[in-house]
Image (cartoon, rainbow, N blue to C red; front, side, top):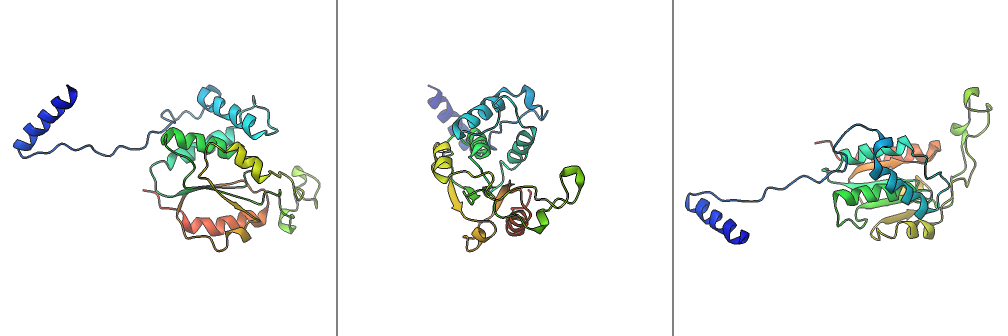
Length: 215
């Protein structure tokens, strides 16, 4: 019945020289209320607890990181932009699981397409001189802030944790060397969680010129 009514309206408007078309709608976005209070966001807490469980991460599932929640606001901000999404440094896949779940809230058919993970899957690289602590407020001067091979996540374990998103592209290798020879793409969101100077600098140097402009 409703289909017949719609057809009748279309015929009437066409007879008058008009046409009815469906306008494209913007992507549905999970953060409709911009209060940034993760303590009151039950959806985030639920997804985060599942991320801890499925990735077998060492974090306390009842301690919710405000930085990850705030990062999701930036991901949401890019919802209607064209371009791929990247995480550099995934550890056990916890944050990528959260990111992908939120992308799927915006696009229920999302299976990981256009999402890229760059990680050595061998932990951190060897710290360099730039990673030396010079301020005694952050530790003993002259020591390194992180040790090589810290935060090691196994590639197969990460793929298992993210099995709901089989189209994710994984780029194993040391950053920035693993960025060489990549297909040319544009990106709308880059999450860098690399801890050390050289890979952070190399990732910024590579990805920044390839970010899509804000519209």
